[in-house]
Image (cartoon, rainbow, N blue to C red; front, side, top):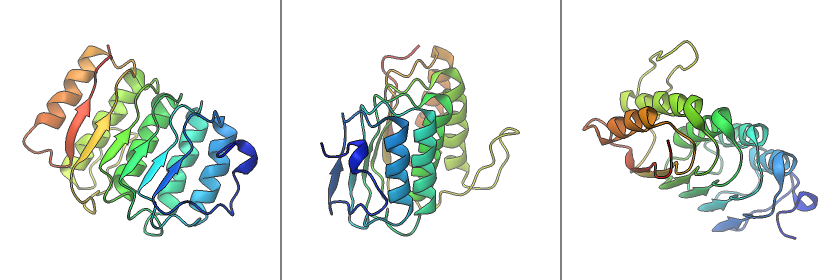
Length: 196
């Protein structure tokens, strides 16, 4: 089975346009192996879509994927336009880590699907801080935990899918207000349906 745990290793060569490994239930172990390959400079230069939806990846695997995007910044993600990570189990920390890394390290990313990842209220707080940082584009401390790093290298606008993440109504209102504000130029749309 393509994308299964047995086939994920650091010598992977990714297809030039699309790597579709969704619905393979690779879990944290498979995500860690995949992240190792991605972060080790696997052939990802032409990769424009990475689909890892419905793989039972938890916070640990999400953290590894986020770290791989960071380690590989400048090496191979210049073409990544679509990142589909919905219907996993990233939780608050994993969802925020992946969003942070994708916004900072994938300059032409147009679609980021993090739906159904159980971000909850804690994840929503972190996402508000990340989006506020992308507006500000400076090194500002928004809380004791989050220091903004410029995402000025982003080109174009991005669609973010956060449906079905157990985000409370108040947090959804904050996110909507932030994105709809005249200052926010990097987010084209933010889908929050099915929360609260």
